[in-house]
Length: 159
Image (cartoon, rainbow, N blue to C red; front, side, top):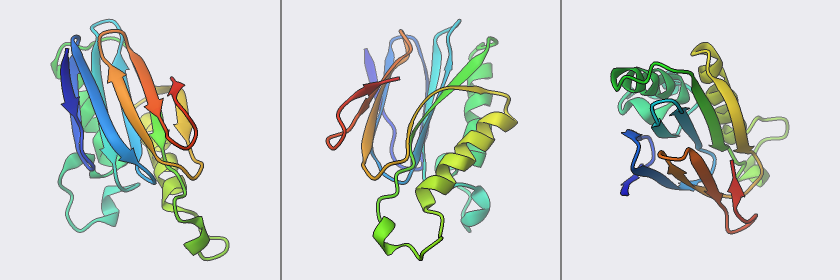
C-alpha cells in the first residue's frame, strides 16, 4: 500500500492500492471523492469556503469551490467514468467563544461551501462527520473505499 499524506490546502488523487491521509482537520473540511467502479479516490484538505476569500488562488485545494472541480477532472482523466460519491469531514467550530454573537463560524461556512461544491458538480454526499468543536484526522483506503475518521476527543468513526 502506498500512503499519500495530504497537507492543508492540498489534494491528492490515487488509484487502487493507495491510502490517502490527512491530519489536523479543525475548521477546515476534508472532501473525499470516490469513483467506486474504477477504485479512484481523491482527498482535499480545504482551508476556505470559497476561492474569492483569498488574494492568492493557489493551490487549487485551498477552497472547496476550487478543489471539487479539480479533483473531478483528475478522476475523469484516470478513466473514472462512473458515478462519483463524496464524504465530508471537519468544519468544527474550534474557537466558538471568540465569535461575535450571531456570527457564523468558519467551520460552518466551510461545510456549507463543501456541500455547495458537491451539489454544483452533481455529486451525492454519502457520509459526513462534520461540525462540533473537535479536531479530526482521515484515513481513506482507495482500494476498498473505507474511510476512517479519527478523533481523540470523540473517538473513531467509519464513514
